Image 1 (cartoon, helix red, strand yellow):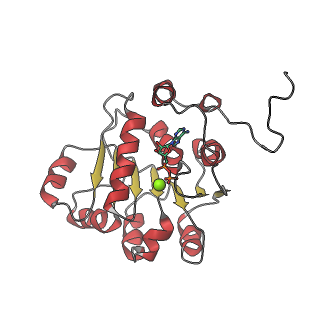
Image 2: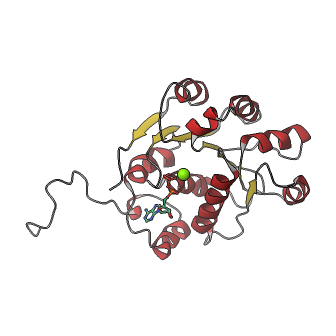
Image 3: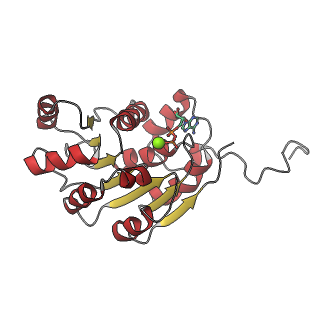
Length: 223
Ligand code: ADP
Ligand code: MG
């Protein structure tokens, strides 16, 4: 080992994605995206996520939470099964679109993975049409997802992974009832991942109800 090449104030070396057992198509794609090392929240949350554990992840904006749950979700997909296996709930249409975009980037070397964005404020017709063609992953806002469940246009009975992204904001916006209705439509065998910038009084009781023996991962800052 060469001496003097490490920063004594650093407690962790950057960890390579190659330390994870990800499908090679995902692994190769990360390199092509320029994702050379995991961010701290990815390094802490991906191992338990890939073992199938429920995870509560707390980290600031920009810490790389999307790829943390996204790689977990994409690595469990059975692409040959054309059913909704992953659902990501976000507080706003803008955030949902960003998540869908990042998931598509992460999935681009996985053949034929269909990722659908279903948000309020957009017309229902095209969404109904898209849903009739099927999807593997749905990203959306709670109100619109609940509406599709009521209409019978969305089937979550094969869901494997449920992600609550920015859970604190979703609850602050009053989405609790929609969230409960959505969760009730998913199998109890699902894996649940909850990501939030804060973990306060609004999030804690929901996490305790919806997650099973969760691993909690908290990352103070990224840089
Ligand atoms: P958060 O949801 O925690 O606010 P994002 O998931 O939106 O953060 O990620 C912030 C930015 O960092 C995005 O532009 C994303 O593409 C980039 N990013 C995420 N993980 C990595 C990584 N391991 N290496 C390089 N860039 C990354
Ligand atoms: Mg985010």
